[in-house]
Each structure stands twice: as structure tokens, then as C-alpha cells.
Amino acid sequence: MEEARYVPPPPGPMLEALDALERFWHSDHGLPPLVEIALVHYQFEAIHPFLDGNGRIGRLLITLMLLERGLLPEPALYLSAYFERHRTLYYDLLLGVSQRGAWEDWLAFFLEGVRTEAKDVAERARRLLDLWREWRERYGRKGGSAHILGLLDLLFERPVLTVPLVKDRLGITHAWANRLVQRLEEDGILTPVSERKRNRLYAAKEILEILEEARNA
Image (tube, rainbow, N blue to C red; front, top):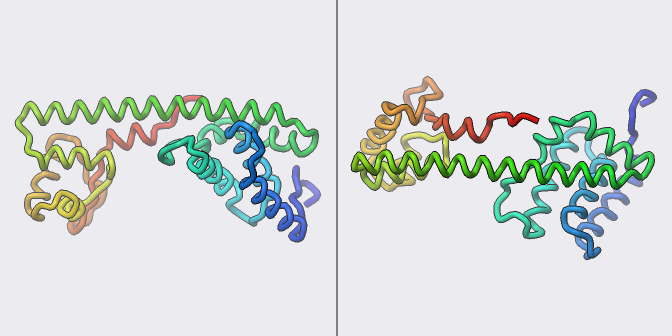
């Protein structure tokens, strides 16, 4: 306790602060939505209501508020990577608000994070769309069946899947689903990622690489 940079409120005031935060969340303040979300994120982290997981929940609140405010149609924007790349600055700015009321510094950092990650998401979406078109054109030229094209579409929804899943989603026999998966494995699009023979997992690694690759700061 003596060495902590920040000590959150004790249980009684903590509950009062959470109640006030909830009322703020559901009130109309006339603030730009992203500014309001930045304020809520800071306040939740300052309240620190749980022994563990406050950071994850606080970041999740950002996405939930973006959805609730109609700023996102799908939960496609996460600031976790941005906060992690600038971890020390992130904590310093939160502390600066608590100690000095340095709201402008925090808001500028938060808004830059939204801009940066939104740009990154758009770029990843473009690359995924290009890959989807490339694969469909490749199999279209080969006279691919509707089922192989359907499996390609399914990969962009479920890049890790099993033969039974393909069977159920495409409405085909197990044998035909297995043949389709084997064909994409032979062509290097799918790769087995488990050793089990029953319900073996297959992954579309090119899709996963686009989704998971670490972006340079």
C-alpha cells in the first residue's frame, strides 16, 4: 500500500462512485460521444471496483459504449493494442487526471488511440476483402462449385473450423464436407491445427495472420 502509485476508494465510496458513474453513463450531457467514452473509461479505472480484471473490463466498456452510442455497427474496434503499446504513458495520463486534473492530455491520448486503431481496422478489413476476392476468383476460374465458394465465405466468419461444422453450415453430407476441407488443405488454404482424428481443427492461417499480426507503433 505504501508503494502503490494509486490507491482506489474503499468499498463504501467505491459503490457510491459506481452508482454515480452509471447515472453519468445514462444521462445526456451534450458531450461528443468519444469524449464521453473517454471520461467513463478513466472514471471506471479510477474506481477500480475489482481485485483483478479492471483493465480488461474498462477496455470492454469502450467497445460497448461505441456500440450503444451507434458509433459502431459491430464490435470491431478495440483500444487494447494501443494502450499496451503505450502502457507507461497510458498509466501516467490516468494518474495525471487523478492528481492534477489533466483531462486534456488524457483526452488527446484517447482520441489519438481511436483514430489510430480505426485506421488499422479499416486496413485489415481491406486486406481481408482483397483475400476473399482473390480466393473466390481463383476457384471461380477453376469452375468451383457453390459449396467450395460457400466454404470460402464461411472461413471469413469462422477461420478455425471442423468438418462437422462445415457439414452443418453448408447443409451437405459429412463425406462431401470432408472432401471440400481436404481440397482447401491440399491447396494450402487450410492447415490442420490439432492432432486428433475426430473433429480435427483446421485454420485459415492467412486470415488469422491478418487478424492477429502485431501492428508497429
